[in-house]
Image 1 (cartoon, helix red, strand yellow):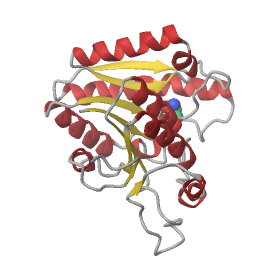
Image 2 (image 1 turned 180 degrees about the horizontal axis):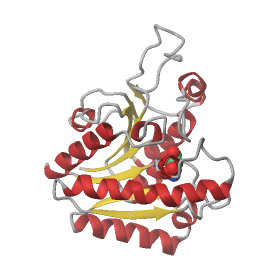
Image 3 (image 1 turned 90 degrees about the vertical axis):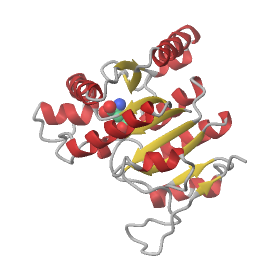
Image 4 (image 1 turned 30 degrees about the vertical axis):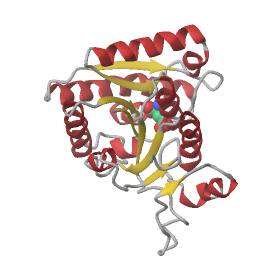
Length: 256
Ligand code: GLU
């Protein structure tokens, strides 16, 4: 199976902006094992800006573009250094791809992108993708990694996209304030009723939240790639998801 896994900043890093070491170690262990079992894995990782903020010792997440971009430049190194070392422990080789909206829209660049990923997979390497935050300003940015991950899943014809988030999935109401809110196991299509859940069930941290996840789901449903939102606190849940067990919220019609 070809799977894209996206991990968000709030899952990767503590609120200090520093790496959540245990979480990232677990994630790299599980992904390495999944690769060893014969699956193709593509990781979309956020966290560049968040980790840059921690490493540069900034007191809070910057709001101006140059400081955000400087933070991303520093944090992206730290991220890749971490992944490179952790995956190397299991003899897996990583490759970094930094992309912007332009690269997805321009046919030639899009072809280059998918050729590179396909070649990396043939070479048994593990592609790790993020938005190129150092140059992507509003006009050319995809803007959030949920959408970026769905675009990647679409362009490389992935079988599954798994968004690891800081929530268990989509709930019938905000689980922080409504104690009997229920986890929705499957959402076959994104309609107005589903969009109305975004406000109630959204995560407060990270760039995305539920609206961008629903946007990603639309892209995936349209191209027949199953998308799952699951809690990234437990990367081992990826095993269950690949076995088709009900974890988190799945999108699209259930495969027969
Ligand atoms: N590309 C951003 C980063 O690495 C994150 C975008 C997102 O969280 O969706 O910091």
